[in-house]
Length: 260
Image (cartoon, rainbow, N blue to C red; front, side, top):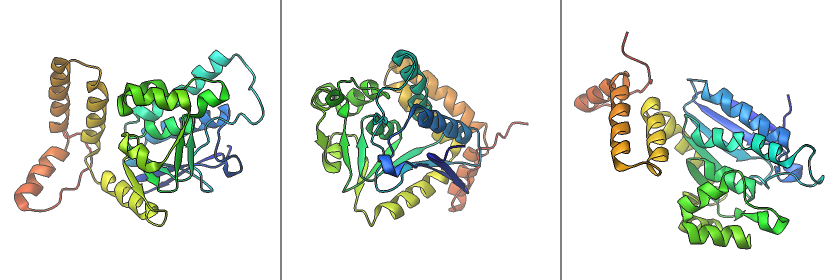
């Protein structure tokens, strides 16, 4: 298997590392497919409770590797195949953290936005570079940007392809936290650890509820919340939380189904 993208699982935390530092972690079609496979593996591993996505060699991801010119095959088929990857990342049934150091450009920027949280180094830089390459945005950017930054700012980013700083990206709602280079590793480790201790079924349902809520009616959201809450009551986690509250202790969540 290619080592262009590495998957490391340590306890409840999976780390996926884009590993093409000689290309600032720009990915080929094969790389996007490998990322999809790693995400699918993680989604079926009940021991994994949080996922960190990062890049090797001081860069996050420079998008698609176009250094060799256009890839073979029909472009529509090729891009549709690649589009399975952002869909899998966005909807993954685990909390995800993009740890961004260096450049997050094009599909690399949108890949970070597919994650639940974006932690950026103060030295990072972001751009929807597509129009400067004669292309329109992809990897989910047309859906993500207006929802996170608003339509006008999304147009600005997509049309002008400007680089924005981590602080400006945070002000636009595209970055969750900005940390200094010597702080980011410890911060992400702590965040992933905290997420891994949360009730996994409730967190997965929160993710689905919030994602779906932006496109549903209020009535539909309330109905989905009721169904989700019924599922939570059928796990060991809700009773464990209630008991811990009464005992003034910390609950340990397993996500196990309590109905036999």
